[in-house]
Length: 471
Image (cartoon, rainbow, N blue to C red; front, side, top):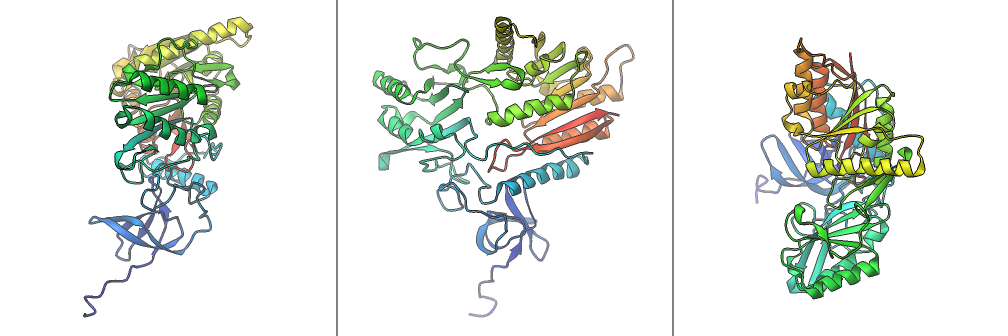
């Protein structure tokens, strides 16, 4: 064998940073970028490359030559790069301080590189519990006929297979302890091979489980579910088709009005009711802190007019209505908007019962597709001097563009005025950066502050917020 035929040694690479997917980033001697799963900044590693392109490569950590001082032993036995490892968490191998620093850097890099925006102030990161924080989850279910067993959990890393999980550290302890009993339950059902998922939704006092089943439940299956609910004090919902088909397991089951599920916002003396499939933040402790911070940043005064764009269940809208006499909540989903209105009415009733001296002011709720907002439609709203924007991952481009269009080309016959302050809550730093660039470079706003929110510890998911003021 000639020297040309000998296998080339695997070069040692120095990790420079991490990307949005928690992969280490390195460069080869020729400048080619390499993304390495499992590697941390400032480590020296070798890599198993499994994907090659002209300008970049992607792989997994092969050998750790020089570990980072921030590397720790993962707490979860299902975490890792090995076959079958759970893909739910990607950052358990680094300590929490580093996780937060990495996510803050991701936010700043996106604002700078994508939006060409540098915040005037970096807000202290919001953080809460490291473990047991996840009160919402969608667990995949798979009946393995050859092994006569059931798997319930998140998908394996980079795979459609379900990880063989017995515990989950990010779920509250009472939910983690349900994983094995749920496996036994599903295995006992006649439709065990027709149940692809279980959705979990925890309220402050109730745990709801939504069983997706592709075949009808037999009377025996129904009894097994009822027995499980009695034993483990959970509430079963069933979903035979789409989300519109979700209902309580039994029509005769007693249910609180309008739902047994709720979470409290104690800083604002509010109770928010929801159905198990409605969108609520997975981390209730962080959500409570986030709402309080957002309202402080808005600096709401009694005479202010506010709009809460993408208002959902009223998570921000109703706290706003404790302070300002004029609040509008806009949402594209009619079912969510109905719940927001219901929450408003129920909390007004609670105020009246206890003679609350901190009254909840009226709120005007409107249903509108905010992804197709135009300048003319925006001009139809009464002027509001402060906005809160809380969009899904797609961001709020149409809304921001409509605002910028009106600022650039004001309608002479209109008294409409742009908001003087905007608080933007984001679950995607890339779309936040895109919208921030439009607000700052075209709309004449300043990005006066920005910071990350650690809503999902041990994952690469970055939530954040930014504050804009009109110059």
